[in-house]
Each structure stands twice: as C-alpha cells, then as structure tokens.
Amino acid sequence: MAIDLEKSSEPKPDKINNYLAGKGKEDLLLVTLSLVTGIIFDTLFYGKALGVSYPLFTITFLSFFFYFWKKYGSADTFDKINSIKKDKNLLLLILIVLLSLTFLIFSNSFLATLNFILIPVLIIAFTVLITGNNSNAWYKPKFINDILYNAVFQPLKNTYKPLKISFLTIRLYFPELSSEKYSVAKKVMTGLFVSIPLLTVIIFLLASADNIFNNSLNRFAWLLENIEMDYIVEHSIIIGCVSLLISGYLWSLFNSPAVLKTGNTDSASPKSGSWDPIVTATVLVLADLIYFLFCFIQFSYLFGGTAHLASGYTYSDYARKGFFELIIVTLINLSILTGSITFIKKENKLTTNIVRTLLSFLVLFTGIMLYSAHFRMALYEEAYGYTYLRLYVHVFMFMLFTWFGLALYRVWKDGFQLLKLFLASALNVYTCLNYLNVDKIIAQNNVERFTKINTVDILYLQDLSYDAIPSLIKLSKISGNEYINNSIKDYLYKKKLKLNRTNDWQSYNISRENAKQLLATELK
Image 1 (cartoon, rainbow, N blue to C red):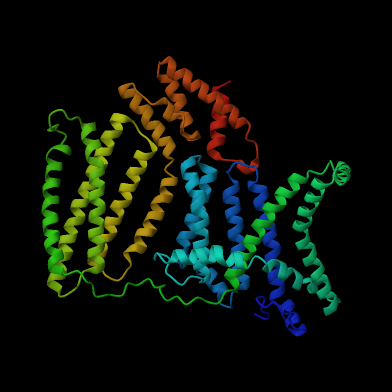
Image 2: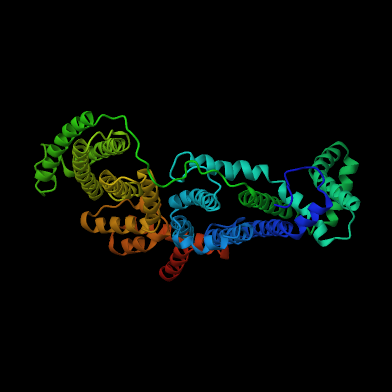
C-alpha cells in the first residue's frame, strides 16, 4: 500500500502521487460502486415486497465483491479465482445463491424470514473466508467472533474511509490544485458535511421560537412545493447508510493484513482423551442392551402392523406420547457418541475396537429409534393433520439420521472434524428444506386426508402461502360442504385483490404469479 489512510496527518506530495497513480483509483472505484450498490438496494427494496429483488441484489453484491477481490488481490489472486471450483467455499457460494432464489420461487413467510437473516450471515462468512480474514476455522464456535469483527467492528471503524478517499482523490481529476488549495477545499467540504445536521437542528429551533421567521420559511417552502423533500430525505438516508456500510466492509476486507490462521486447519490431530475406555465400554454395553430390548419391542408390535397396544390406547395416542421421548433419547445418544469420539483414551487396539463396535451398535439402535419416531409422527399426522411443525420435525429427524451416519463413519476413521461435517450437512439439509415447497406438501396431504376421513382444518390451510391455493381450489370442488366452500371462496377473493395490488417488478415472485393467474382463471 502506497499510502496509509489510517493516519490523519497530511500526506507528503510524493506519497499522494504514488497513491493516486496506483491504489487511489481502485479505492475511488470502490467508493463509487458502493454508492451504486446503495442506489440499487434502495431501488429494489424500499417500499417493495420481497421477490426477484433479493436474488438480484445478492448476485450484484457478490459480483462487485469478486471484481474487487481480483483487483485488490496479489499476483496469485487470479489463480485463486480460477481454482474456486476446487475450493470448499464453492459449496457455501452455491447455497447462498440457492437460498436467495427462494424469494423468487416460493412464498413461505417463515422460511423467507429465516433466509432474510441467514443469507447475509452466510455472505459475510463466505467473504471473510475467501479473503483470509478469519483467525478460526469456519466450523469452530470462535468463528462467530470473526464474523462479528469483520461485519460490525471493522465497517463501523472504516465508515469515514469513503470521505477520506474522496477528498484525497480530488487531485486525481484536479491535478492543478496546489497543496494549499487542496487543503482548503477539503476543509470546506468537511465543513459543509458537518454543517448539514447542525443547521437542520438550528433552523428547527429558530422556526419554533419566532413566528415571522417560520412564516418566511413557509413561503420559501411554497416555492419548493413540487419537490418531495420527504421522499428525497428518506431515500438519501437509505442510500447513504447502505453505501457507507458496504464500502467500509469491503475496504476493511481488502486492506486488512493477513490474519494468522492459528485454528484454521481441516485435519484433526489425534489428542489424548480423558475418558477411560473400560468405563466407557461398560456404559455402552448397558445402554446397548436396553436399546436392543426397546428395538425388539418396536419390531414385535409397532412395525409389525398388529395392534398389540395397551387397553384404551389408540395409535395416535401412542404416537403423541412416545415421539418427544424418543427424540430426547436420540439427542442423548448423539452426545454420548460425539463425546466418546472426542474424549476417549486410545490405550490399545483391542479396547479401541471394542468401543468402536459398541458405538456402532449405538448408532444402529438409534437409527431404529429415529425410524420409530418418524413412524409415530406419521401416525399422529394421520390422526390430527399435517402442519409446518410436524413436517419440519421430519426434516429434523432426517438431519439427525445424517449426523449419526457421519458419526459412524468417524468412529472407524480418524483424521477429520466431525463438527465440520455436522454444520455442512445441516446447511445442506436446510437448503433442501427450502426447495421442498412445504406449503404445497402440507396442503396436498391435508386434502388427501379429507378424502379419507372427511375432516380438515380449513383455517390452517388458509394460513399457508400461495403455493397452497391449487389444493384449496381442489378442496372446494370435492368437499360438498357449504361452510368449507364459502370459506375458501371468500379467502380466494381476498387473495385475488391482494395479488392485483402487487405490481412492482422488484416484487416479482413465481409462486405469487402462478396464484394470480390461477385465481384470474377460477374467479371470473
């Protein structure tokens, strides 16, 4: 770096010239494109419902990031960009894009809320990792400190950098300015910038204190009545804040010294644990025996299809009573499994293999219990209907099953971080959940359930997203129930009116558009 912007003293002319001839142009371009990004943000989001705007802004920001990453990087940066397809961070980049596209494709409000929060966090994690501004591996809890440091502390610390860069690069376009004139111009611009909020407060106080002065201001305001000052102020604040935040963040990423990656290693070096293998094996033998008995009972009557239940019990009662207990036991087993992998002493090959075998049985029995919990939840859904929570529980159980599979692999193969795989698989499962179209699944299953037992929670179906509308239309045609049909008809008319009011291109959403076209056809 040819010049240190951290110093407040006036830089020497030769340093200024070196800066302007090299990095000054890049810094000025960063500030300019950050301003453009702020304008794009305001255009896409202010007063608009989320839709195609979200993936557009995500792709825009990432494009600017990669452009500056290449421009600010060292000689080998281009090689890094070319090799990103081989980089583990590519998966994170793909997940970011896929999650942002859900705002275009689906209309599930719960997942949209989660994604609205999660995507910026993932973008920060990705940009911090790819620029090497992390001191901890991404799968370690302390990586949260890296995210907060780079996303909060550094941007706030460097929010003044765009102004300083702008002042300094005035000479880029006005080289005839002498040092004295440049210094005066910089001070005048600084004074104007500082005076705006101060004068605003002073004018407000003076207008409140003197009616004649207030009337004079009103006459002046009359001359400007065609100018929407509220509109200008609101958009200027949004553009200014977003631009300063983005420029401060990017400048921090590309101008910070390389961080020592003390904990950033993917390999798991063998460590001497503290759990005695004999004690652990004893605990595992007893636990496996109990789980074997439990699983034998499951196969004997629950999975066998025979109703050998206690008197007074129905399948739905049985499912509701046993599900959460099984999930708690599964989480306990996961703790035992990961604890044994992490902390057990490796004294000799015999005890190590015994413990590994017992842990493998633990995984096997836990898998059966997970299937039992899944089976119970399916019974419960047949009795009480399908909801968001119940479907999310199925996905959660699938994630647990995946974790146990990864843990079983780790039991027999050393050399990798289990937490790393847990986090990566959880993020992948969550992304897949976004693309399941849970509203469509819930609505279809509840309508199918209605055809079998002639009961449905119509109010719950009306709380689903636009993806449930086709199923509601189908239900109105097959129900034969006047209350259900009238309720659906009123709901669909309200949705049609609401959809007709959403015309901003920034809010375009495939789910909403399909529902709009379907309702236009059905409700003529």
